[in-house]
Length: 108
Image (cartoon, rainbow, N blue to C red; front, side, top):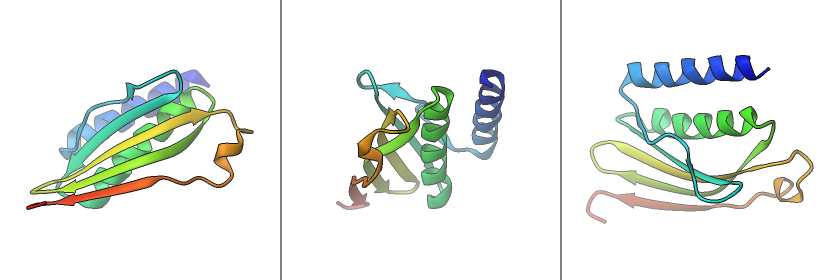
């Protein structure tokens, strides 16, 4: 199972690199809290890449992703910074998730 997750992650990173998406990779903030950023000229690609890599990170641990904060910025490129947690499947925080979205556009 870990081999499949590793192959999926490698393919996702290869795809991201080939498409011009820039990503920070997953960074640890604490024991179960992480952050990742991605940017691209296409808003849906930037957001999808950040969320997809975050979800892959949690899946590799056999856990579920809970987004806690999204920071969206648009200048020439769209940038998404996502803060998330990897939680066990039965964690009550997964039932009614709430997260904060912060938007910043050029000139703000």
